[in-house]
Length: 74
Image 1 (cartoon, rainbow, N blue to C red):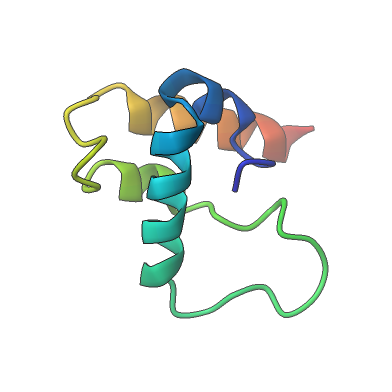
Image 2 (cartoon, rainbow, N blue to C red):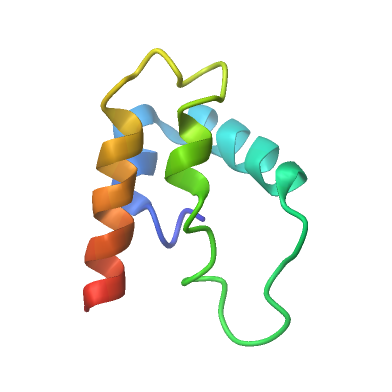
């Protein structure tokens, strides 16, 4: 996830971002079977809205969504 959301990692710091990533991964029902993880995690911004450590940061989900879509458009 850090590869997909590098600016989000910088914005909230690696300790918080890693915690959010671990919690997000535990909620996932499926993982990429082949290819790269760089295009996996499109639901991470939505997850950030409910994650206890980040849900008070109302801008964070939108920031992460913009970062994800920017990466997808390249």
